[in-house]
Length: 99
Image 1: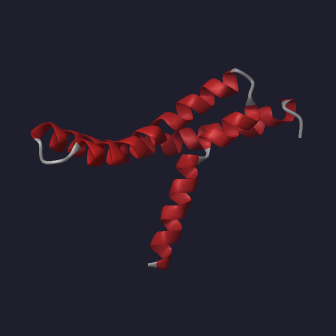
Image 2: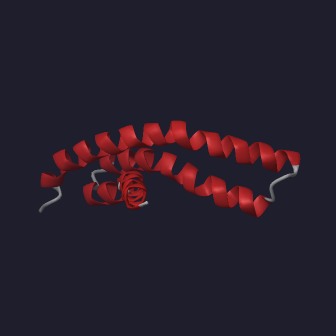
C-alpha cells in the first residue's frame, strides 16, 4: 500500500486511538496523581514513582505524537505510534476474560 492510500485508514485509526487516549487520560491520571503525592510526601521512592508514572504518561502522549506524524505525512509511523493504547486495552480485556 502506498503512503497516499494510508491517509484515510491512518486518520480513522488515530480518531479511535484518540478516544482511547482520552479515556486513558482520565483513568491514567489517578495513579499518576496518587504516586506523585506519595513521592512528595516521602512514602514512595523515586524509582517506584517513575516506574508507575512513565507508562501512563506515555500512553497519554501517544495520540498527540501520532497526530503530529500524520500532519507530517508519515502515515505508517503514525499508525505504529498510535497503537499502544488500543493494544493495552485489548490485552487488559483478554486478561480480564481469562481470569
